[in-house]
Length: 171
Image (tube, rainbow, N blue to C red; front, side, top):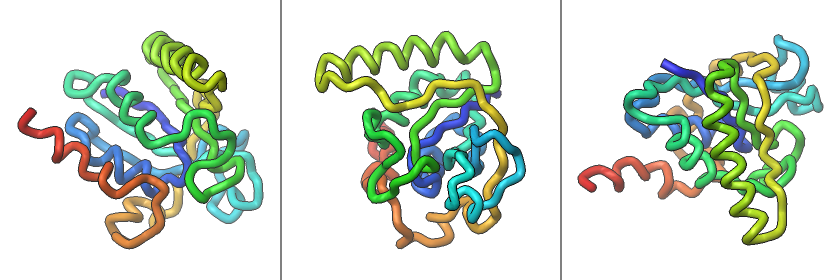
């Protein structure tokens, strides 16, 4: 098993999105890369510097890091700083965080390819951070699997993408 941490705006939708894929064993919403470990949602909203992040534990024999990152780039605006959908602020920044150095070469190769594509298309660099994990604090229980508990809840990710794995089956 491997673990990657992805910040892609509001973590409710990011978690729901990644839960659909075979090989994703577990997801957990939380707060990352804000300098201190124990924070809560109110502190994050007041500007603690943390990013809303989803911890993804995956079976690398069933889904690769590159595949996860391809999916990730489907649900973010990679050139938007501190904003995804209607959510704005440092907590909604995008980031790929790793706590296992062995993931860096694959992540960096993917990142560099995506940045080159974006520069050729729009002349804008990626706003996505690619950094070592600097602490991860799990979010409060009511933020875990939020969109399963609240199906009509806000999400910046189009609902059709929450069924992406089902549309891929049989191919």
